[in-house]
Length: 478
Image (cartoon, rainbow, N blue to C red):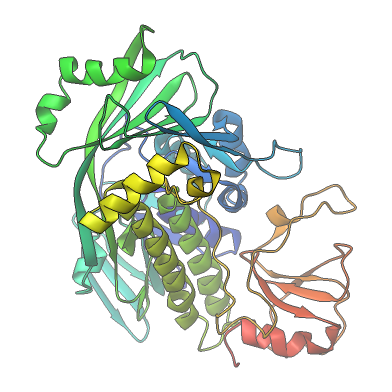
């Protein structure tokens, strides 16, 4: 009975299942489709801190870095001028690179392999959820293939068209952008490095923009913003698409691996927890992809949900622990929506004032370095700090714990979870119902209490305050 039902077998659902298994909690994953898609990259950009989360899923983070493309330079152009160059520090050998590009299909295959090897994860394909009910004892789910499932809790990670969200009667308020985006993966050897290139108002896509991202095996993702009235079926035809691609690849031979068209959305459920159901990823929030905040934030949802469910099921969590899921991840969604909303107002201005602002910033950026800071092509994803969370002690910060190399030579961050970690001398009196703790000497003063997801719950001068801080971080009291 103490299993969790995960609805949705995409990356967010599989990460939730694998992290629950790491904590000893079984799950059954209901995936509506009968098999993985075989073409198309979809999400491609994995952020460093999310790679750490994936590393805790049986080493998937390292596998993504090995298979993917690491980029450290982002160039932004206005017409023929390069106006902004962003360079991340080169990897030092400690920790993952800032960003690694690998198509979502490849990430899903890696997670599928780990899930298939994990006895506590039961993945059921072609199992579309058709009903859901919950009571004081658990959640009951029925699928269209006849499964009658019962679990203590449910994680709904079934995407933008979430069945669970509909069954719960939750609205999905927000808006959709009228501008459309044409997306293609092409295979070609191009005469420039593996770097991100963003083109504002090129003469071959006037008034709009084009984004180019590298992928493994000489594959490149190209995103074109296109007019609202364009005939997308015609534009996806060979002649039209070839004309667009030739503007970027020149005379280089290429092949189209995949092409599609999208409209972007900014939406969110009013609450990410309804009783025993926790919504995660696109089932809970949708945002434009500029800044790579979609899948990255969904995986952070999954980790937040997994450790809290595991601690509640083990009897360690207090009455406020699951409530904090919406408080924390809802606030993270609000920040991501605010950031991506500002980006979309710059990329696809909807008012005369917004259009004038964009034109002014881009024109000035050619000669004015100060104007370049106002160019918004997407603020890249970063972990949300839970400073205002009811679980965070005053002065605790709530930020992701700094990485370190321990005396053993191991990195600190991959070690976090499924338990709380105490950095420094434990000492102090712990509550009788306290969970087991991992004790590590990270060579830093005082005592730091770190949650299973790597966020700092408390920074203490001594171990004397560890007990109250742990109770607070477990949702027992404030």
